[in-house]
Amino acid sequence: MQHVVIGAGPSGVIAAETLRKLQPKASVTLVGDEPEAPYSRMAIPYFLVKQIAEQGTHLRKTADHFAKREIKVLQKRVEGLDRAARQLTLAGGDKLAYDNLLIATGSRPVSPPIPGIDLPGVTSCWTLADARRIAATAKPGARVVLMGAGFIGCIILEALAKSGATLTVVEMEGRMVPRMMNDTAGNMIKDWCQEHGVTVHTSTKVNAIEKHGNALRVVLNSGATVDVDLVVSATGVRPNIELVKDSGIATDQGILVNRQMQTNDPSIFAAGDVAQGIDFSTGEYSVQAIQPTAADHGQLAARNMAGQKGALHRGCVNMNVLDTLGLISSSFGLWMGKAGGDSAELLNRERYRYLNLQFEDDVLVGATSLGLTQHVGVLRGLIQTKTRLGAWKDKLVADPTRIMEAYLASTQAVGFNAGVLK
Image 1: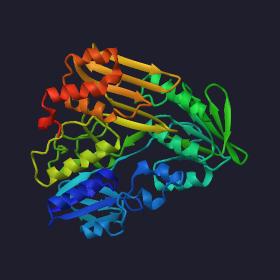
Image 2 (image 1 turned 180 degrees about the vertical axis):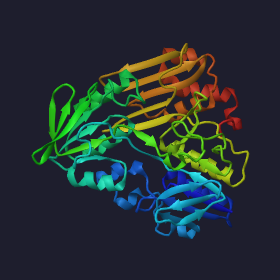
Image 3 (image 1 turned 30 degrees about the vertical axis):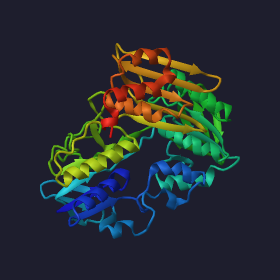
Image 4 (image 1 turned 90 degrees about the vertical axis):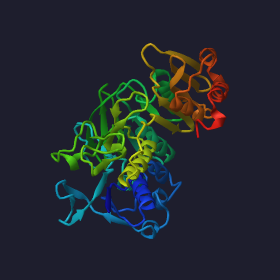
């Protein structure tokens, strides 16, 4: 049996390792198109602030990790897919046959259609090559504009601010982290950043980037300009589905998969940012470009590739946890609420404390927290198990801080100690 995994990120690496464990005698090949060892993009900000060296970004820390497990690693770009022949074409013309194929090609940054976006000194922060360029410029005294204050943007913000550079953030939506936080929480994060020396413009667009002497000039839609040494673009990502274009593999926003992470071709699977799988909270199929989902997808796809047909994807809970200059924020599930549902809210702006709970009947379906970390696991657990809170729902509406009490009382009532949540 020849298993081929395209994509050397967390999803692909976990899939390759799982395949090796389940089928010790099978051929397992992991194909990535970057020159470095498989690494985590989420570790790049730590590299930027010199908390880790480049090797610290690597998903597996020993040079012989994959060789010891007889996982062949190819550093080549896949340029063609022949489903009929079950064969891939690699850069340079080499062919690679497969019995089962996993496409875990991830996503890539989307560059906004702005004049000057291709100028030297404008970069994304997605690869280690990008990180090296940023590290060479973002130093104390440097002037940097960050375009985009979404989840990825705010991770990069942390690193840029800690570099000592003078940082200006431009976000076109009316709040920071708009796909993770409501208006209250998103604007509290903005206030926090500004208190910590970062200039933040929300409801603002970059109209153009111009060459200005040896530097760059960023022109905002307000008419204001910002002179900088570096522009970092973090305005969103798009799944890498080009490989399957015109192949007959079904796609929408990403590659469509069933509950076995299988495409409409029984021998081809997809996982991670490129896969459009089921959302736990809505039951709809969507792309969830977050690392926990990628890890779950990879392990589950590998189990099905190895023949464990009962390994069903039950949907991933939308989950984001973010550290912004020391302020921890998180959101889970339907954090924006559900039509006809109830909510509970606790707010202390001065101390940067916020908790918002969203209910459908007596079930917690979503949550947002700011400056509170002790109940993060509890919030996720209640949402993921769809535990009925009963009378505790009304108690939480009155006082959301009693979430731990509600968790213990409700889960014990349905047999928590008997192993329901194991």
